[in-house]
Image (cartoon, rainbow, N blue to C red; front, side):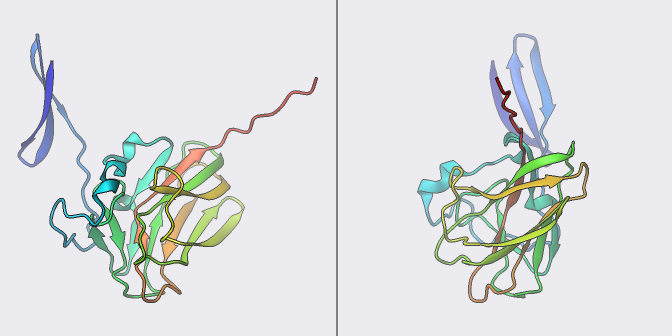
Length: 206
């Protein structure tokens, strides 16, 4: 059995050859955010090729609930890039070092159940990144704002870093927002947010 990807009318089709003949399965194509400026870098041009294997091409391949930048709410001028891997999906967004304090990206998940979730944020890293990017988590118990250093290597597969564990209600009641206030002279990166359900293990007393 053989499989390959073909483009037919701009739509990806997975073609599988088996003993029964041809079977075609449509593939969900990720579309870039309509409010973001396009990537200026040529395809395949990266500053660190060793990090290419850490790219996650499909958000759906990750555990938990993942909101990519393509489904986020953008305020201000954000631009796509693929120059600095790794990233999730098509690429990542940066604020062009412009509109400081006026730009933001908000990730709103549709959580299937209420409970505690570990929130992880993905971002690429280098010395051009902000060292005090403000991130606000809106959860069931209020709002928590922390500042992260996007020059540091994320702990989880060089891509995701944990923001903490928070209690959320079911549905679209919670969100995570990346802002740009206080980050003058450096790039703020927005890529994806992951929500991992936390199971509290209760120990039985003997």
